[in-house]
Length: 241
Image (cartoon, rainbow, N blue to C red):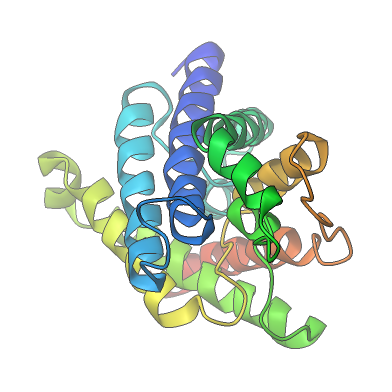
């Protein structure tokens, strides 16, 4: 894989991931959306389908990692670090692009939402927020949830048939759905630093009426937690497998 292929693949794949993921949250929470109030299960499956679409699209170019935590876990497993900055740069650019595209798709709903007396907060469409603010608990949730993502991804690589049949990405997509349903309640399961930080930056910059805070005081947790989780998953995989 060339450097150009890696960067372009990660940009495109991560943009698709965020377009689907932020898009399903916008569909559920914004006023005048046909999917309004359709619930957490819809959100979990929307994010899972976003992983599937983004990873399958990026796979021929970059392998479709789409997540710095996954990239770190793979680097620890393989010992190959030279492409890590390139992967993460593509993931960040793609995450920001996907957030902008989501805003454009739901532009009219964002405008209408601001005109309501009880306007819905918009940060949750782009990035995660905890239900209970507790630094230790929130950080532990993100670490554990990311291990639950990255460790199976590394282990899936040992199953030859998954790679040969092309179903590995599909299995990972359902893994993301499962994490959302089982572990997403406390913090919204960022499990991906680019997925949270890129859209949070975009949220802070976009001219969304009455958008509220971008919550930078919390922003480090969905970055540091998944990075620690990804690294621990790589260490555990090397030790156990």
